[in-house]
Image (cartoon, rainbow, N blue to C red; front, side, top):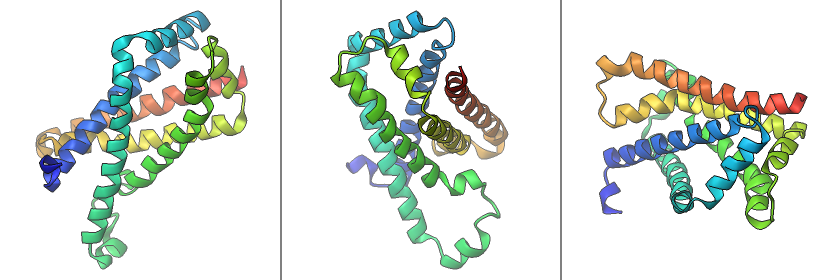
Length: 210
């Protein structure tokens, strides 16, 4: 795409796709919280609505393409940055002006991608290919599997770490002034990271032990 030829344009596209995915994550969390309260009927109704609403069905391929684009652009930008970075700088100064989360965005992202593959195989594919109406039983049943639950929790912890840097980085790529906004963006990013990591993990752990 011609519009994405410059590095600035690539970073802006990366930022916008990331913020789009953050909105989806919070919608997903809100739906998952209905597993606990109000409970089964509310969750099944929410899933049925998501599965039959024409607008949401139209947005599914957009969301899927958003994931693919964000992942591909992230890998490309990481590869480009590493190829331009002096070896001595990497070895000696990698932690001076950057956080652990910022230096490992690619790895936390790839770990989340690994979990998504497992999640697709265990939930999304059965949901799409089988006549499943008890979505509550399907989801809560998965949380009884200790390996799946452990992977689920680790994936959302990794996603939280990813978001803790990704949120502020996205707004800086979109032109937010670092001096004026950096502290606020860091705080917002950390709050978002905690809510996502704790919210999803707590749901999984709750159903594993209950």
